[in-house]
Image (cartoon, rainbow over the protein chains, first blue to last red):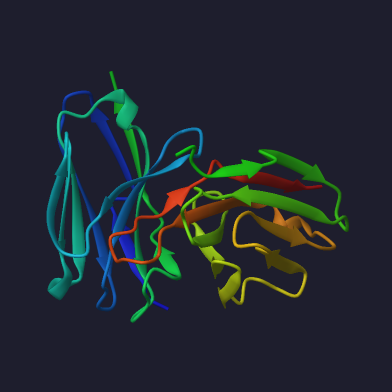
Length: 111
Length: 115
């Protein structure tokens, strides 16, 4: 199956700082999703972003499919941003079937 | 849109017992997925349904695991003769699978502990 690598594995920030999370994948994909898992375990879909750039408030994501990576930007971080951020991509040729997840980036934001 | 609902939230069972989990997807979503997550890892795919048809199964889904979605609405995941290695968070997700712009929506999960 496709390999998904996320970096950094851990990130500690002070409130108000900006950060960039990276997701590399081993094969061409037709979609990519970013998720946030809060400290209670709930996985929330942040972005569906097969290519290009999307913005949602303080968060934005960019996927460069030809170079097999995606970036998640968090600006002016808040303590509520803490949790684990995952990216996920489908099997080659899949249309929203099996998704492969990375191991995530654990983000801790201190007040 | 009440979100994806999973029951129970927690289940503690003794090794060798059978357990069954239930997932109610978002009502208009035709695709339903089961994933498993262990500590420090991302979710791992188990199986997915389009309406009532089970279209894909992972090799993680051994003979002791079975999933159903009898009327294309809710789904159940049964684990027979549980083993300690089955301890994990079992996550259900749903999506509207008719277009590519269909993100996955996850439930809160069922945490299984096998003693």
